[in-house]
Length: 211
Length: 360
Ligand SMILES: Nc1ncnc2c1ncn2[C@@H]1O[C@H](COP(=O)(O)OP(=O)(O)O)[C@@H](O)[C@H]1O
Ligand SMILES: [Mg+2]
Image (tube, rainbow over all chains, first blue to last red):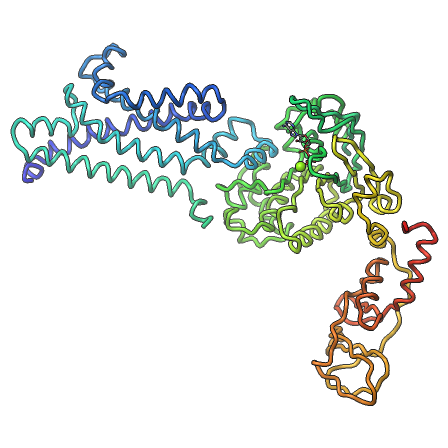
Protein backbone atom coordinates (compact mmCIF):
# COMPACT_ATOMS: atom_id res chain seq x y z
CA UNK A 1 0.00 0.00 0.00
CA UNK A 2 2.97 2.32 0.29
CA UNK A 3 3.18 2.72 -3.49
CA UNK A 4 0.32 5.24 -3.60
CA UNK A 5 1.93 7.57 -1.10
CA UNK A 6 5.38 7.31 -2.63
CA UNK A 7 4.05 7.83 -6.15
CA UNK A 8 1.22 10.26 -5.42
CA UNK A 9 1.95 12.24 -8.62
CA UNK A 10 1.70 9.19 -10.82
CA UNK A 11 -1.42 8.06 -9.07
CA UNK A 12 -3.10 11.44 -9.53
CA UNK A 13 -2.13 11.58 -13.17
CA UNK A 14 -3.55 8.12 -13.80
CA UNK A 15 -6.71 9.18 -11.96
CA UNK A 16 -7.08 12.28 -14.12
CA UNK A 17 -6.69 10.36 -17.35
CA UNK A 18 -9.02 7.62 -16.15
CA UNK A 19 -11.67 10.11 -15.15
CA UNK A 20 -11.46 11.97 -18.45
CA UNK A 21 -11.72 8.79 -20.49
CA UNK A 22 -14.76 7.67 -18.51
CA UNK A 23 -16.68 10.92 -18.23
CA UNK A 24 -16.38 12.30 -21.75
CA UNK A 25 -18.14 9.25 -23.23
CA UNK A 26 -20.94 9.60 -20.68
CA UNK A 27 -21.55 13.20 -21.75
CA UNK A 28 -21.24 12.48 -25.46
CA UNK A 29 -23.39 9.39 -25.08
CA UNK A 30 -26.09 11.41 -23.37
CA UNK A 31 -26.12 14.00 -26.14
CA UNK A 32 -26.42 11.33 -28.80
CA UNK A 33 -28.92 9.18 -26.90
CA UNK A 34 -31.44 11.99 -26.27
CA UNK A 35 -32.56 12.38 -29.89
CA UNK A 36 -32.38 8.60 -30.42
CA UNK A 37 -34.41 7.94 -27.28
CA UNK A 38 -36.93 10.51 -28.47
CA UNK A 39 -37.13 8.73 -31.81
CA UNK A 40 -37.51 5.31 -30.18
CA UNK A 41 -40.31 6.59 -27.96
CA UNK A 42 -42.07 8.29 -30.82
CA UNK A 43 -41.90 5.77 -33.60
CA UNK A 44 -42.64 2.09 -33.27
CA UNK A 45 -40.50 1.20 -36.29
CA UNK A 46 -37.54 3.25 -35.04
CA UNK A 47 -37.85 1.47 -31.73
CA UNK A 48 -37.96 -1.90 -33.51
CA UNK A 49 -34.55 -1.11 -35.01
CA UNK A 50 -32.88 0.81 -32.19
CA UNK A 51 -33.69 -1.48 -29.29
CA UNK A 52 -32.28 -4.74 -30.74
CA UNK A 53 -29.34 -2.78 -32.17
CA UNK A 54 -28.44 -1.33 -28.79
CA UNK A 55 -28.68 -4.77 -27.21
CA UNK A 56 -26.33 -6.20 -29.80
CA UNK A 57 -23.84 -3.36 -29.44
CA UNK A 58 -23.80 -3.84 -25.70
CA UNK A 59 -22.77 -7.46 -26.10
CA UNK A 60 -19.69 -6.67 -28.22
CA UNK A 61 -16.70 -7.43 -25.95
CA UNK A 62 -15.01 -4.22 -24.90
CA UNK A 63 -11.54 -5.29 -25.97
CA UNK A 64 -12.83 -6.05 -29.46
CA UNK A 65 -14.66 -2.76 -29.56
CA UNK A 66 -11.56 -0.80 -28.66
CA UNK A 67 -9.09 -2.56 -30.97
CA UNK A 68 -11.43 -2.29 -33.93
CA UNK A 69 -11.77 1.47 -33.54
CA UNK A 70 -8.56 2.44 -35.37
CA UNK A 71 -9.84 0.41 -38.31
CA UNK A 72 -13.22 2.10 -38.27
CA UNK A 73 -12.05 5.60 -37.48
CA UNK A 74 -8.70 5.61 -39.28
CA UNK A 75 -7.16 6.80 -36.03
CA UNK A 76 -3.81 5.85 -34.57
CA UNK A 77 -3.79 2.92 -32.20
CA UNK A 78 -2.70 5.11 -29.28
CA UNK A 79 -5.34 7.81 -29.82
CA UNK A 80 -7.65 8.38 -26.88
CA UNK A 81 -10.42 8.81 -29.43
CA UNK A 82 -10.54 5.03 -29.78
CA UNK A 83 -11.66 4.40 -26.26
CA UNK A 84 -13.82 7.53 -26.14
CA UNK A 85 -15.82 6.43 -29.17
CA UNK A 86 -16.03 2.84 -27.97
CA UNK A 87 -17.36 3.82 -24.56
CA UNK A 88 -19.68 6.39 -26.10
CA UNK A 89 -21.23 3.60 -28.12
CA UNK A 90 -21.83 1.54 -24.98
CA UNK A 91 -23.29 4.56 -23.24
CA UNK A 92 -25.63 5.31 -26.12
CA UNK A 93 -26.69 1.68 -26.28
CA UNK A 94 -27.53 1.79 -22.59
CA UNK A 95 -29.20 5.19 -22.49
CA UNK A 96 -31.49 4.93 -25.52
CA UNK A 97 -33.74 2.56 -23.65
CA UNK A 98 -33.62 4.61 -20.48
CA UNK A 99 -34.48 7.85 -22.22
CA UNK A 100 -37.23 6.24 -24.25
CA UNK A 101 -38.66 4.74 -21.04
CA UNK A 102 -38.33 8.07 -19.26
CA UNK A 103 -40.16 9.90 -22.03
CA UNK A 104 -42.77 7.16 -22.10
CA UNK A 105 -43.39 7.68 -18.39
CA UNK A 106 -44.53 11.28 -18.93
CA UNK A 107 -48.33 11.20 -18.39
CA UNK A 108 -50.33 11.69 -21.57
CA UNK A 109 -52.51 14.36 -19.97
CA UNK A 110 -49.44 16.44 -19.15
CA UNK A 111 -48.31 16.36 -22.77
CA UNK A 112 -51.86 17.13 -23.91
CA UNK A 113 -52.01 20.04 -21.48
CA UNK A 114 -48.71 21.39 -22.81
CA UNK A 115 -50.09 21.25 -26.33
CA UNK A 116 -53.28 22.95 -25.24
CA UNK A 117 -51.28 25.75 -23.58
CA UNK A 118 -49.63 26.48 -26.92
CA UNK A 119 -46.20 24.89 -26.57
CA UNK A 120 -44.43 24.22 -29.84
CA UNK A 121 -42.96 20.71 -30.09
CA UNK A 122 -39.28 21.52 -29.49
CA UNK A 123 -39.98 23.68 -26.47
CA UNK A 124 -42.39 21.11 -25.10
CA UNK A 125 -39.73 18.43 -25.46
CA UNK A 126 -36.98 20.45 -23.82
CA UNK A 127 -38.96 22.04 -21.01
CA UNK A 128 -41.66 19.49 -20.20
CA UNK A 129 -40.91 15.99 -21.44
CA UNK A 130 -37.15 15.87 -20.96
CA UNK A 131 -37.17 17.24 -17.39
CA UNK A 132 -39.85 14.71 -16.49
CA UNK A 133 -37.71 11.94 -17.96
CA UNK A 134 -34.75 12.87 -15.72
CA UNK A 135 -35.41 10.42 -12.86
CA UNK A 136 -35.40 7.42 -15.20
CA UNK A 137 -32.50 8.81 -17.25
CA UNK A 138 -30.31 9.39 -14.20
CA UNK A 139 -30.68 5.72 -13.26
CA UNK A 140 -29.23 4.81 -16.67
CA UNK A 141 -26.49 7.42 -16.43
CA UNK A 142 -25.34 5.96 -13.14
CA UNK A 143 -24.96 2.51 -14.66
CA UNK A 144 -23.16 3.99 -17.68
CA UNK A 145 -20.78 5.99 -15.50
CA UNK A 146 -19.80 3.06 -13.30
CA UNK A 147 -19.40 0.64 -16.17
CA UNK A 148 -17.31 3.15 -18.13
CA UNK A 149 -15.03 3.67 -15.16
CA UNK A 150 -14.49 -0.04 -15.01
CA UNK A 151 -14.00 -0.45 -18.76
CA UNK A 152 -11.46 2.36 -19.24
CA UNK A 153 -8.82 0.02 -17.82
CA UNK A 154 -9.07 -2.15 -20.94
CA UNK A 155 -7.54 0.77 -22.83
CA UNK A 156 -4.22 0.01 -21.18
CA UNK A 157 -3.95 -3.15 -23.30
CA UNK A 158 -3.49 -0.96 -26.34
CA UNK A 159 -1.25 1.42 -24.46
CA UNK A 160 -3.66 4.07 -23.19
CA UNK A 161 -3.38 5.71 -19.77
CA UNK A 162 -5.50 5.48 -16.64
CA UNK A 163 -5.54 2.90 -13.87
CA UNK A 164 -5.17 0.14 -16.46
CA UNK A 165 -1.51 1.14 -16.79
CA UNK A 166 -1.13 0.58 -13.07
CA UNK A 167 -2.52 -2.95 -13.43
CA UNK A 168 -0.01 -3.73 -16.17
CA UNK A 169 2.91 -2.24 -14.30
CA UNK A 170 1.88 -3.97 -11.11
CA UNK A 171 1.56 -7.28 -12.90
CA UNK A 172 5.10 -6.89 -14.18
CA UNK A 173 6.77 -5.58 -11.05
CA UNK A 174 4.97 -4.73 -7.83
CA UNK A 175 1.65 -6.08 -6.59
CA UNK A 176 1.16 -2.89 -4.59
CA UNK A 177 0.57 -0.96 -7.80
CA UNK A 178 -2.33 -3.26 -8.69
CA UNK A 179 -3.93 -2.42 -5.39
CA UNK A 180 -3.50 1.27 -6.10
CA UNK A 181 -5.31 0.88 -9.43
CA UNK A 182 -8.06 -1.15 -7.87
CA UNK A 183 -8.66 1.26 -5.03
CA UNK A 184 -8.58 4.18 -7.46
CA UNK A 185 -11.21 2.51 -9.66
CA UNK A 186 -13.52 1.81 -6.75
CA UNK A 187 -13.20 5.28 -5.27
CA UNK A 188 -13.76 6.92 -8.64
CA UNK A 189 -16.82 4.77 -9.33
CA UNK A 190 -18.20 5.56 -5.91
CA UNK A 191 -17.66 9.30 -6.26
CA UNK A 192 -19.08 9.33 -9.79
CA UNK A 193 -22.17 7.48 -8.66
CA UNK A 194 -22.75 9.72 -5.66
CA UNK A 195 -22.32 12.87 -7.75
CA UNK A 196 -24.84 11.67 -10.33
CA UNK A 197 -27.27 10.73 -7.62
CA UNK A 198 -26.89 14.21 -6.16
CA UNK A 199 -27.32 15.81 -9.58
CA UNK A 200 -30.50 13.80 -9.97
CA UNK A 201 -31.81 15.11 -6.67
CA UNK A 202 -30.96 18.70 -7.50
CA UNK A 203 -32.60 18.43 -10.91
CA UNK A 204 -35.80 16.85 -9.60
CA UNK A 205 -36.89 18.68 -6.46
CA UNK A 206 -40.51 17.84 -7.26
CA UNK A 207 -39.93 14.13 -6.83
CA UNK A 208 -39.24 14.45 -3.11
CA UNK A 209 -41.88 17.15 -2.67
CA UNK A 210 -44.51 14.71 -3.89
CA UNK A 211 -44.01 12.30 -1.00
CA UNK B 1 -68.55 34.10 -29.59
CA UNK B 2 -67.89 30.60 -30.93
CA UNK B 3 -69.77 29.30 -33.95
CA UNK B 4 -69.89 25.68 -35.08
CA UNK B 5 -71.10 25.52 -38.67
CA UNK B 6 -71.95 22.05 -39.97
CA UNK B 7 -68.95 20.63 -38.16
CA UNK B 8 -68.28 16.92 -38.68
CA UNK B 9 -65.43 14.84 -37.34
CA UNK B 10 -64.80 11.38 -38.70
CA UNK B 11 -61.74 9.64 -37.28
CA UNK B 12 -59.47 7.51 -39.45
CA UNK B 13 -61.08 4.32 -38.20
CA UNK B 14 -64.43 5.57 -39.49
CA UNK B 15 -65.90 6.61 -36.12
CA UNK B 16 -68.12 9.62 -36.56
CA UNK B 17 -67.55 11.50 -33.32
CA UNK B 18 -69.37 14.71 -34.27
CA UNK B 19 -72.04 14.88 -36.92
CA UNK B 20 -73.02 18.15 -38.62
CA UNK B 21 -72.88 20.22 -35.45
CA UNK B 22 -74.49 23.65 -35.78
CA UNK B 23 -74.35 25.73 -32.64
CA UNK B 24 -73.46 29.20 -31.45
CA UNK B 25 -71.90 29.88 -28.07
CA UNK B 26 -72.75 33.43 -27.03
CA UNK B 27 -69.95 35.67 -25.82
CA UNK B 28 -69.71 36.02 -22.06
CA UNK B 29 -71.85 32.97 -21.26
CA UNK B 30 -71.31 29.43 -20.05
CA UNK B 31 -72.43 26.82 -22.53
CA UNK B 32 -72.38 23.24 -21.34
CA UNK B 33 -71.99 20.23 -23.62
CA UNK B 34 -73.57 17.29 -21.86
CA UNK B 35 -74.24 13.74 -22.91
CA UNK B 36 -73.30 10.12 -22.27
CA UNK B 37 -69.68 9.02 -22.48
CA UNK B 38 -68.42 8.78 -26.04
CA UNK B 39 -71.02 11.10 -27.57
CA UNK B 40 -68.41 13.50 -28.96
CA UNK B 41 -68.18 16.22 -26.30
CA UNK B 42 -64.40 16.19 -25.98
CA UNK B 43 -63.95 16.00 -29.73
CA UNK B 44 -66.22 19.03 -30.20
CA UNK B 45 -64.30 20.96 -27.59
CA UNK B 46 -60.90 20.07 -28.96
CA UNK B 47 -61.82 21.24 -32.42
CA UNK B 48 -62.12 24.77 -31.03
CA UNK B 49 -58.43 25.00 -30.14
CA UNK B 50 -57.34 22.67 -32.93
CA UNK B 51 -56.19 19.80 -30.75
CA UNK B 52 -58.36 18.04 -33.35
CA UNK B 53 -59.21 19.41 -36.79
CA UNK B 54 -62.68 18.86 -38.23
CA UNK B 55 -63.23 16.64 -41.25
CA UNK B 56 -65.64 19.21 -42.64
CA UNK B 57 -67.39 22.36 -41.55
CA UNK B 58 -66.12 25.55 -39.98
CA UNK B 59 -65.50 26.79 -36.47
CA UNK B 60 -65.31 30.52 -35.92
CA UNK B 61 -64.00 32.14 -32.76
CA UNK B 62 -64.99 35.80 -32.67
CA UNK B 63 -65.68 35.61 -36.38
CA UNK B 64 -62.32 34.14 -37.29
CA UNK B 65 -61.94 30.66 -38.81
CA UNK B 66 -59.75 28.70 -36.39
CA UNK B 67 -58.16 26.83 -39.28
CA UNK B 68 -56.61 30.11 -40.43
CA UNK B 69 -54.57 30.46 -37.23
CA UNK B 70 -51.47 28.40 -36.46
CA UNK B 71 -52.35 26.07 -33.55
CA UNK B 72 -49.85 27.22 -30.88
CA UNK B 73 -50.80 30.86 -31.44
CA UNK B 74 -54.51 30.03 -31.38
CA UNK B 75 -54.14 28.01 -28.18
CA UNK B 76 -52.36 30.75 -26.26
CA UNK B 77 -55.53 32.79 -26.71
CA UNK B 78 -57.85 30.03 -25.47
CA UNK B 79 -57.77 28.78 -21.89
CA UNK B 80 -58.04 25.02 -21.46
CA UNK B 81 -58.79 23.04 -18.30
CA UNK B 82 -58.88 19.24 -18.23
CA UNK B 83 -60.03 16.61 -15.79
CA UNK B 84 -56.73 15.59 -14.20
CA UNK B 85 -55.74 19.28 -14.19
CA UNK B 86 -52.75 18.28 -16.36
CA UNK B 87 -50.42 20.38 -14.24
CA UNK B 88 -46.70 20.14 -14.89
CA UNK B 89 -45.43 18.00 -11.99
CA UNK B 90 -41.91 19.47 -12.22
CA UNK B 91 -42.95 23.10 -11.96
CA UNK B 92 -44.10 24.96 -8.90
CA UNK B 93 -47.72 26.03 -8.72
CA UNK B 94 -46.72 29.62 -9.48
CA UNK B 95 -44.71 28.62 -12.55
CA UNK B 96 -47.54 26.37 -13.70
CA UNK B 97 -49.90 29.33 -13.61
CA UNK B 98 -47.33 31.55 -15.36
CA UNK B 99 -46.95 29.07 -18.25
CA UNK B 100 -48.94 30.80 -20.96
CA UNK B 101 -47.73 34.35 -20.22
CA UNK B 102 -44.16 33.03 -20.40
CA UNK B 103 -44.88 31.27 -23.68
CA UNK B 104 -46.33 34.51 -25.00
CA UNK B 105 -43.08 36.29 -24.23
CA UNK B 106 -43.82 38.12 -20.97
CA UNK B 107 -40.79 38.62 -18.77
CA UNK B 108 -40.56 36.23 -15.83
CA UNK B 109 -41.29 38.81 -13.17
CA UNK B 110 -44.44 40.13 -14.74
CA UNK B 111 -45.63 36.59 -15.45
CA UNK B 112 -45.10 35.58 -11.82
CA UNK B 113 -46.83 38.68 -10.50
CA UNK B 114 -49.79 37.87 -12.70
CA UNK B 115 -49.72 34.24 -11.55
CA UNK B 116 -49.78 35.30 -7.90
CA UNK B 117 -52.84 37.49 -8.57
CA UNK B 118 -54.59 34.55 -10.16
CA UNK B 119 -53.93 32.23 -7.24
CA UNK B 120 -55.81 34.74 -5.16
CA UNK B 121 -58.58 34.96 -7.75
CA UNK B 122 -59.19 31.22 -7.56
CA UNK B 123 -59.06 31.26 -3.77
CA UNK B 124 -55.66 29.72 -3.07
CA UNK B 125 -53.29 31.12 -0.43
CA UNK B 126 -50.20 32.83 -1.84
CA UNK B 127 -47.82 30.40 -0.13
CA UNK B 128 -49.19 27.57 -2.30
CA UNK B 129 -47.27 29.18 -5.16
CA UNK B 130 -44.05 27.60 -3.96
CA UNK B 131 -45.47 24.10 -3.76
CA UNK B 132 -45.40 21.41 -6.40
CA UNK B 133 -48.69 20.05 -7.79
CA UNK B 134 -48.26 16.72 -5.99
CA UNK B 135 -48.44 18.62 -2.70
CA UNK B 136 -52.00 19.78 -3.39
CA UNK B 137 -55.33 18.00 -3.07
CA UNK B 138 -57.32 17.18 -6.19
CA UNK B 139 -59.63 20.14 -5.67
CA UNK B 140 -56.72 22.52 -5.17
CA UNK B 141 -55.02 21.20 -8.30
CA UNK B 142 -58.20 21.90 -10.23
CA UNK B 143 -58.16 25.48 -9.00
CA UNK B 144 -54.57 25.82 -10.17
CA UNK B 145 -55.69 24.41 -13.52
CA UNK B 146 -58.33 27.13 -13.76
CA UNK B 147 -55.83 29.82 -12.72
CA UNK B 148 -53.39 28.60 -15.36
CA UNK B 149 -56.06 28.71 -18.04
CA UNK B 150 -56.95 32.28 -17.09
CA UNK B 151 -53.39 33.58 -16.79
CA UNK B 152 -53.08 35.26 -20.17
CA UNK B 153 -56.64 36.59 -19.83
CA UNK B 154 -58.01 34.71 -22.85
CA UNK B 155 -61.55 35.64 -23.92
CA UNK B 156 -62.46 31.97 -24.34
CA UNK B 157 -62.19 29.15 -21.81
CA UNK B 158 -62.62 25.46 -22.65
CA UNK B 159 -63.23 23.12 -19.72
CA UNK B 160 -63.34 19.34 -20.24
CA UNK B 161 -64.92 17.60 -17.23
CA UNK B 162 -62.76 19.73 -14.96
CA UNK B 163 -64.52 18.71 -11.75
CA UNK B 164 -65.31 15.06 -12.47
CA UNK B 165 -62.39 13.60 -10.57
CA UNK B 166 -63.00 15.35 -7.24
CA UNK B 167 -65.41 14.21 -4.55
CA UNK B 168 -68.99 15.56 -4.63
CA UNK B 169 -68.65 18.10 -1.83
CA UNK B 170 -65.48 19.63 -3.26
CA UNK B 171 -67.09 19.54 -6.69
CA UNK B 172 -70.04 21.56 -5.49
CA UNK B 173 -67.69 24.15 -4.00
CA UNK B 174 -65.75 24.40 -7.24
CA UNK B 175 -68.97 24.82 -9.22
CA UNK B 176 -70.14 27.64 -6.96
CA UNK B 177 -66.75 29.25 -7.27
CA UNK B 178 -66.81 29.01 -11.04
CA UNK B 179 -70.16 30.78 -11.12
CA UNK B 180 -68.88 33.49 -8.77
CA UNK B 181 -65.73 33.89 -10.87
CA UNK B 182 -67.66 34.02 -14.11
CA UNK B 183 -69.83 36.81 -12.71
CA UNK B 184 -66.60 38.80 -12.37
CA UNK B 185 -64.72 37.86 -15.51
CA UNK B 186 -67.51 37.23 -18.03
CA UNK B 187 -65.59 34.81 -20.25
CA UNK B 188 -67.02 32.80 -23.09
CA UNK B 189 -66.91 29.35 -21.54
CA UNK B 190 -67.56 25.96 -23.08
CA UNK B 191 -67.88 23.40 -20.31
CA UNK B 192 -68.06 19.67 -20.96
CA UNK B 193 -69.61 17.22 -18.50
CA UNK B 194 -71.51 13.94 -18.46
CA UNK B 195 -73.35 15.04 -15.31
CA UNK B 196 -76.75 16.56 -16.07
CA UNK B 197 -76.99 18.19 -12.62
CA UNK B 198 -73.71 19.98 -13.22
CA UNK B 199 -74.90 21.03 -16.68
CA UNK B 200 -78.19 22.44 -15.38
CA UNK B 201 -76.44 24.24 -12.55
CA UNK B 202 -73.65 25.87 -14.56
CA UNK B 203 -75.03 26.37 -18.03
CA UNK B 204 -76.58 29.56 -19.33
CA UNK B 205 -77.35 27.23 -22.19
CA UNK B 206 -76.96 23.48 -22.40
CA UNK B 207 -76.28 21.39 -25.49
CA UNK B 208 -77.47 17.83 -24.94
CA UNK B 209 -75.56 15.49 -27.23
CA UNK B 210 -76.29 11.88 -28.02
CA UNK B 211 -74.07 9.06 -29.17
CA UNK B 212 -72.95 9.41 -32.74
CA UNK B 213 -72.21 13.07 -32.32
CA UNK B 214 -75.74 14.40 -32.76
CA UNK B 215 -77.02 17.49 -31.05
CA UNK B 216 -80.28 16.44 -29.37
CA UNK B 217 -81.29 19.84 -28.00
CA UNK B 218 -79.70 23.19 -27.36
CA UNK B 219 -81.62 25.31 -24.89
CA UNK B 220 -81.67 27.07 -21.55
CA UNK B 221 -81.73 24.68 -18.56
CA UNK B 222 -85.32 25.50 -17.59
CA UNK B 223 -86.47 24.85 -21.15
CA UNK B 224 -84.68 21.49 -21.30
CA UNK B 225 -86.66 20.48 -18.26
CA UNK B 226 -90.01 21.95 -19.16
CA UNK B 227 -89.94 21.23 -22.89
CA UNK B 228 -87.50 18.43 -23.78
CA UNK B 229 -87.30 18.15 -27.56
CA UNK B 230 -87.51 14.35 -27.61
CA UNK B 231 -87.50 11.20 -25.50
CA UNK B 232 -83.72 11.07 -25.41
CA UNK B 233 -83.52 14.47 -23.76
CA UNK B 234 -86.48 13.74 -21.49
CA UNK B 235 -84.77 10.55 -20.32
CA UNK B 236 -81.41 12.18 -19.98
CA UNK B 237 -82.63 15.03 -17.80
CA UNK B 238 -84.29 12.40 -15.66
CA UNK B 239 -87.63 11.14 -14.39
CA UNK B 240 -87.63 13.78 -11.71
CA UNK B 241 -87.42 16.62 -14.20
CA UNK B 242 -90.70 18.06 -12.90
CA UNK B 243 -89.09 18.43 -9.50
CA UNK B 244 -85.83 19.73 -11.00
CA UNK B 245 -87.73 22.40 -12.87
CA UNK B 246 -88.58 23.97 -9.53
CA UNK B 247 -84.92 25.02 -9.32
CA UNK B 248 -85.61 27.50 -12.10
CA UNK B 249 -88.91 28.91 -10.78
CA UNK B 250 -88.98 31.64 -8.20
CA UNK B 251 -91.22 30.93 -5.24
CA UNK B 252 -94.14 33.30 -4.83
CA UNK B 253 -95.02 32.25 -1.29
CA UNK B 254 -95.65 34.41 1.77
CA UNK B 255 -93.13 34.31 4.61
CA UNK B 256 -94.85 34.27 7.99
CA UNK B 257 -93.41 35.58 11.21
CA UNK B 258 -92.70 33.06 13.90
CA UNK B 259 -92.15 33.32 17.64
CA UNK B 260 -88.86 31.72 18.48
CA UNK B 261 -87.88 30.34 21.87
CA UNK B 262 -84.50 29.71 23.43
CA UNK B 263 -82.99 26.85 25.38
CA UNK B 264 -83.85 27.46 29.04
CA UNK B 265 -87.20 29.12 28.33
CA UNK B 266 -90.30 27.58 29.82
CA UNK B 267 -93.09 27.26 27.26
CA UNK B 268 -96.69 26.22 27.26
CA UNK B 269 -97.87 25.35 23.80
CA UNK B 270 -99.88 23.01 21.70
CA UNK B 271 -98.00 23.88 18.50
CA UNK B 272 -94.46 23.39 17.11
CA UNK B 273 -91.95 25.92 18.47
CA UNK B 274 -88.76 26.99 16.69
CA UNK B 275 -85.75 27.06 19.00
CA UNK B 276 -82.96 29.54 18.22
CA UNK B 277 -79.65 30.57 19.79
CA UNK B 278 -78.73 34.04 21.08
CA UNK B 279 -78.15 35.35 17.55
CA UNK B 280 -81.49 33.94 16.38
CA UNK B 281 -79.92 31.14 14.37
CA UNK B 282 -82.22 28.09 14.20
CA UNK B 283 -81.26 25.17 16.45
CA UNK B 284 -84.23 22.86 15.95
CA UNK B 285 -87.87 22.29 16.76
CA UNK B 286 -89.80 21.53 19.92
CA UNK B 287 -92.83 19.32 19.37
CA UNK B 288 -96.24 20.33 20.81
CA UNK B 289 -96.55 19.58 24.54
CA UNK B 290 -99.31 19.36 27.13
CA UNK B 291 -98.92 21.85 29.92
CA UNK B 292 -95.68 23.77 30.41
CA UNK B 293 -92.20 22.48 29.84
CA UNK B 294 -88.64 23.79 29.96
CA UNK B 295 -86.79 23.89 26.62
CA UNK B 296 -83.70 21.68 26.89
CA UNK B 297 -81.20 20.68 24.23
CA UNK B 298 -82.19 17.01 24.37
CA UNK B 299 -85.82 17.83 23.49
CA UNK B 300 -84.76 19.45 20.18
CA UNK B 301 -85.76 17.80 16.92
CA UNK B 302 -83.38 18.63 14.08
CA UNK B 303 -84.79 20.94 11.44
CA UNK B 304 -84.79 20.34 7.67
CA UNK B 305 -83.14 22.27 4.88
CA UNK B 306 -83.45 26.05 4.87
CA UNK B 307 -85.46 28.05 2.37
CA UNK B 308 -83.07 30.36 0.48
CA UNK B 309 -85.83 32.89 -0.23
CA UNK B 310 -85.47 32.18 -3.94
CA UNK B 311 -86.51 29.10 -5.80
CA UNK B 312 -89.65 27.03 -5.53
CA UNK B 313 -87.50 23.95 -5.13
CA UNK B 314 -85.81 25.33 -2.08
CA UNK B 315 -89.20 26.36 -0.60
CA UNK B 316 -90.59 22.88 -1.20
CA UNK B 317 -87.50 21.16 0.21
CA UNK B 318 -87.63 23.33 3.32
CA UNK B 319 -91.36 22.83 3.97
CA UNK B 320 -91.31 19.08 3.33
CA UNK B 321 -88.13 18.34 5.27
CA UNK B 322 -89.20 20.29 8.34
CA UNK B 323 -90.76 18.20 11.12
CA UNK B 324 -93.30 21.02 11.63
CA UNK B 325 -94.09 21.37 7.90
CA UNK B 326 -92.88 24.94 8.28
CA UNK B 327 -89.87 25.83 6.11
CA UNK B 328 -87.45 28.13 7.91
CA UNK B 329 -85.88 31.04 6.05
CA UNK B 330 -82.88 32.97 7.34
CA UNK B 331 -81.06 36.19 6.46
CA UNK B 332 -77.46 36.57 5.31
CA UNK B 333 -76.22 36.20 8.89
CA UNK B 334 -78.18 33.00 9.34
CA UNK B 335 -80.75 34.57 11.69
CA UNK B 336 -84.35 33.41 11.39
CA UNK B 337 -86.55 35.67 9.25
CA UNK B 338 -89.71 33.59 9.22
CA UNK B 339 -91.30 30.43 7.86
CA UNK B 340 -93.14 29.30 4.76
CA UNK B 341 -96.12 26.98 5.07
CA UNK B 342 -96.16 23.73 3.14
CA UNK B 343 -99.75 24.50 2.07
CA UNK B 344 -98.68 27.78 0.45
CA UNK B 345 -95.78 26.07 -1.30
CA UNK B 346 -98.04 23.33 -2.68
CA UNK B 347 -100.51 25.96 -3.89
CA UNK B 348 -97.70 27.82 -5.67
CA UNK B 349 -96.63 24.51 -7.19
CA UNK B 350 -100.13 23.79 -8.43
CA UNK B 351 -100.33 27.27 -9.95
CA UNK B 352 -97.01 26.81 -11.76
CA UNK B 353 -98.21 23.45 -13.05
CA UNK B 354 -101.48 24.94 -14.28
CA UNK B 355 -99.49 27.64 -16.07
CA UNK B 356 -97.48 24.92 -17.86
CA UNK B 357 -94.21 25.92 -16.21
CA UNK B 358 -93.80 22.51 -14.62
CA UNK B 359 -94.07 19.33 -16.67
CA UNK B 360 -96.35 16.76 -15.08
N1 LIG C 1 -58.44 9.56 -31.79
C1 LIG C 1 -59.57 8.86 -31.97
N2 LIG C 1 -59.64 7.89 -32.92
C2 LIG C 1 -60.76 7.19 -33.12
N3 LIG C 1 -61.90 7.36 -32.44
C3 LIG C 1 -61.91 8.31 -31.48
C4 LIG C 1 -60.74 9.10 -31.20
N4 LIG C 1 -61.05 9.95 -30.20
C5 LIG C 1 -62.33 9.70 -29.88
N5 LIG C 1 -62.85 8.72 -30.65
C6 LIG C 1 -64.22 8.21 -30.61
O1 LIG C 1 -65.09 9.27 -30.90
C7 LIG C 1 -66.24 9.21 -30.09
C8 LIG C 1 -66.39 10.49 -29.31
O2 LIG C 1 -65.33 10.59 -28.37
P1 LIG C 1 -65.22 11.79 -27.34
O3 LIG C 1 -65.36 13.08 -28.07
O4 LIG C 1 -63.98 11.60 -26.56
O5 LIG C 1 -66.50 11.54 -26.43
P2 LIG C 1 -66.91 12.16 -25.02
O6 LIG C 1 -65.93 13.24 -24.68
O7 LIG C 1 -68.28 12.67 -25.22
O8 LIG C 1 -66.88 11.03 -24.05
C9 LIG C 1 -66.10 7.96 -29.24
O9 LIG C 1 -66.76 6.93 -29.87
C10 LIG C 1 -64.62 7.72 -29.23
O10 LIG C 1 -64.34 6.36 -29.07
MG1 LIG D 1 -64.61 13.35 -22.97
